[in-house]
Picture 1 (cartoon, rainbow, N blue to C red):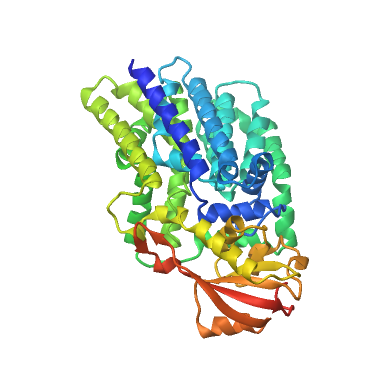
Picture 2: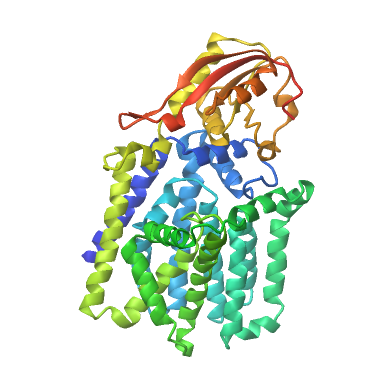
Length: 491
């Protein structure tokens, strides 16, 4: 009976997330990636292109709606569960670790909840990481060498999703070096052919970077490893807190404790534990190190580690501790807390009620964009221009929200970051066109910069989002109308 209730609960969570995906306005980053999908390219300045292709496939099927922007990510999240289950059954064929329990645990964690609803590069990354983990599990269990080519394909497609996928390579080769039985692969051709296959799949991104002075590679390296040596202890605590938050504190504590226990097992039987340790902890420690020397890693950056990490946690618990009442009650409490916190977040997304200040509530990002789109349309309707319109903004995500929620699907760009719009065509910004300009900062220096490129330039409206009854002054957008673009600036 307990098993049935847990499965019903997990399925209910998934169905509720599908409803959320259809109802919530796009988050700023989602709108930005959607804008890519309307201008497909070999790669982009911020990330590789696969998230744009995934969104393009969804909107081709169902149109430019929130649901179909997110549908590909939702389906990828379901497929992740399948590969996790297959990995569990491969690593632990005696059924000592129930795969359905691991799946239910994943479904109720905030990490998986976010990936099921919000469309970002992390979703396809997690999908191909889970496929790669499954292929590697078949390899270490002595199955056909052909699984190396599945692993290579997963690696290449994962790199097309997010550069983080490259960490998968040293993790796997570390296992080959440390596990005597698996070490034989180091003298075989298959691992190296698999890497060549991955590079062939990834080659469009390499070509794009070659054509654009390695812009995307440089940007990501600067994001993760630019030296910022201040407040080191606080940065490390902030990073650790983010990791505890995405899988909940009790589950994170269980993961750390059971990982330490697994380190002591070095028998042949323990090969799966070494495998799972090397696919989780190196990722977490790498981003901990990057947080110390540079910008604190976003909580989601080490997310792939928890695909293996949660399997490891549940496997160690079932192997040695499930008969001990203290551990059993703790793990039930950990799973229950994860379920409760995820349920609260789901409800809060629909009807915000949590008591923290509205300004600090991250769910504000899903509100107010339809209103902005309606104001852009009113400006265009009140000021018709036969030559057409384009959009400008000093924040790329606001620009993308304005394009998505206004009619006409205008071209637009953030002039302060031209490198992010290499996919645009100059013909989208022709002299004589009008522009709706969305500015968060209205200092005179910036105003003068815009003004000189138009015959006239005037403020026509203000967008001040209201969330939970409070004005979001930090999100205020001043709306300007630039008449008859003079040309020469948008290149």
